[in-house]
Image (cartoon, rainbow, N blue to C red; front, side, top):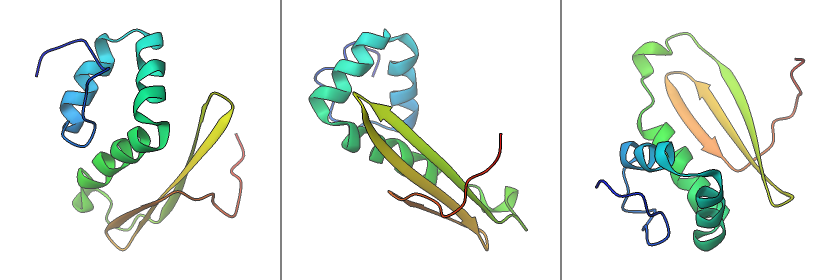
Length: 102
């Protein structure tokens, strides 16, 4: 699927690898425009679904972690919480209960 036009993309049909290829060659303005056209939540949901699909339990043995992502687009916050426990990866549109120090 080599193309550099994000505007007519069906985000549900694009694989994470194809999406990564498109984003790698796109200008920031094109990415922002695509977020606006397709909806930030829809695009981000697909990104995080791809992360969950590619989770490798064999590499997370014994790991328990909550990873907080907060993506800001046009002043709107889109929180996602990735929880890794017992060899599983769960993703939700949530905020964690604790803040990590930097």
